[in-house]
Image (cartoon, rainbow, N blue to C red; front, side, top):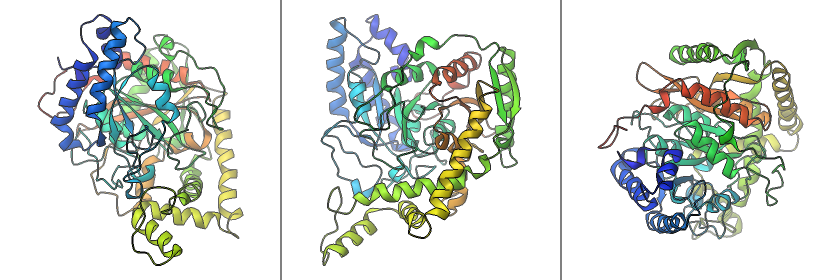
Length: 491
């Protein structure tokens, strides 16, 4: 048995019994990275020296009889979260050599449990994309089919977990960037309620939408990681002081009587037949477990993509104004004057997708157009949130597809931004409403590609999402299947 194939909770048990050490687990993970990283390209930075040192410290803590929930467990971190002294590139040339002098709040919370940080994962530049093809460092590949995308923008984290290059990972989700890649790679990904997890130390894309969340091999691991990173943070003014449950303890409850809502607007013609079939099979499975389902309506969902692509670029154009060659990262050499330095730095430092969104956002915020675009989009955003409020009066959770299709081929949509944007059509509304959502494996396409289902819940009701997701997972085996990649493929 290879240790890198196991989950957090399985390794916790082995560490507790003294059957294995953190150093052995970490060495196993780094061997796996050496074996398959050339195929997946999931990482931008690999922290082997630091990781092995952290594993030795973790082993000392375990010998002292003071292990915590993640002590000695290898984790990967999306490369838009700051780790002190480690490059944080955000997948961009403009931050290629940026080394933060501080830890983000999620890193500080994790460090209290002495995990092992093994590396920073690849991502779409500044988290703008649905395929991890816009990274300055090259595209990441899906371990289920190396010719296909892993989803985005947390595609590096998803690919690393699916390929067993990490035991678990953190991603960030602005319009579906945890859930969509989780579905594409056949793993579990959860976007918490906005404000549940601190964003301090997360490189900002769209501040009213961004959330950090766990990406794991199963639902129990997701609950463990979420429990550790959640909670109020005085360093983040949008962090909310709401009690955090012990999510792992909520698992195992049955779902008899749970009311599942099926939004009719989410089952549209462009859904791939395999996705539709898997979703309804999942609904029937949950019905066998005692849940009931009914059709509900979210009438303003059809406007979600348009609203998102006004609000997110508008906020991005403001957030990315700081990258001017003076304060952070890359600066062009040989410019004649300040304005030329600004212009050339941004022109050379940003990729095409980032420039496109900065232009869209700047236009939407410009004098004379603000009321027509940004203000109107904000008003429709409120209507989308109210739709969810009404739906949750009738049901406990909503069940939808995570993505309309399984993973598509690399390059298939790069020349058609609108088609690329529609990859997130089912995940964007949750970010606009600020509610939590989880994607779990629910089947495979005829080509053998993973399919994910999405569960959405009320604000701060992550406990219910995990309860339903865990019940489904315990009666299916989709999460146990592994892609054929590398030299060893059996668990």
